[in-house]
Image (cartoon, rainbow, N blue to C red; front, side, top):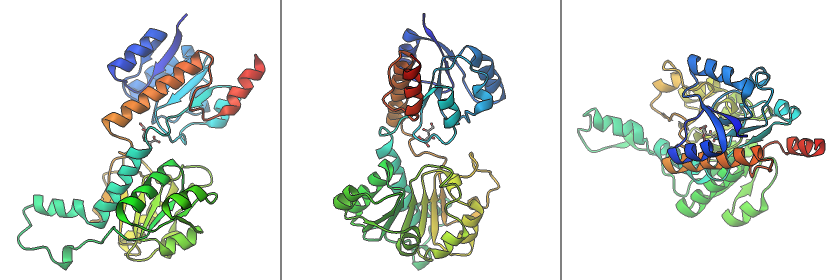
Length: 330
Ligand code: 8YV
C-alpha cells in the first residue's frame, strides 16, 4: 500500500514521477489562503510531508495524526517545532551540503556588490546618469586583502572562508560556539570573541542558524562596535539581526554598507527603510536559488522522505531522538 504524501513545493517532472511511483501524492500548488486550506484538508491522511518555507507548528501537526516523516527542502529548520515533531516520533530531515557552495557564492556576491556599489552604479548607468568619468563620489571599497569576519563557522561559513582566503587573499577571523582547528589550519583563520570580530573585521558575515540563542544576536550594541568602514552581510536568517538597529546603523553611517539576503519578515515590505538606502544591496532570499542547487535539494529531500517512509533512517536526520524513540517502540 502506497504511503500518503503531501507535497507543498512543486518538484521537477523526474522527481514527481519518482514520488508517484512510490507514494500517493497530493500536491499543494501554493501556500496562499486556498493552498493552506487544501493543505489542512490533506493533513489528516498524510503520512509524509515535503516542502519548505512553511511554519510547521503543533497546531498544524495536530491535524496530521498519521504523520511519520517531514522532509524539508532547506538546510534551515527554524520554522519547524522540532521538539513537538520528536515528541510525536516524526522524523524531520533537511538538505545540508548540497546548497553549501551556492549559498557561499551568494555571500560573496553580496560582499562584492556592496563593497563596489555594483547595484547603485549599475542603476546610475541605466538611468542615463553616466555623463563623465567616475570620481571619488562613486568609489567603492576594496575586497581583496581586507579582513573577512565570519559569525558561525559551519559548512557555509567554511565555504565563505575558503573563497576569502584562496580567492581574495583575505585574512579570516571567525566566531562560533567553539574553535575549529581544521578551519584555522586550512584557511589561516583565527578564532576570536564576537566583540573582537565586530571591531576588527572589514566584512562581517552572518552564516549561523536561527535558534533561541542567536535570535536578535546582532543589535544596537553590536553595531556600535563595528567600524564606520565595515560592511555587514547577512545570508543566514533575518531574525538573527535587530533590523531596526541595522537601519539606524546604516542611516547614522555607523557602518558603510550592508548586503542582505534575508530579513525579519519576508518578502521584505515595500515600505522598508532599507529600500531607501543606497548603501544597501537587498536580494530576495536567493541563497540557494540556482536551478542546479534547488534540484539537488529537492532530490535530497525526496531521498530522505522515501527512506523514512520505508522504515529506514534518512541520511539527513535533524532529530535523531525521534529515530531512537521509533526503534525503541518496535
Ligand atoms: C531557502 C534556505 O530558504 O535552505 C535554507 O535554509 O534558507 C534557502 O535555501 C530554502 O531553500 C527554501 O526553499
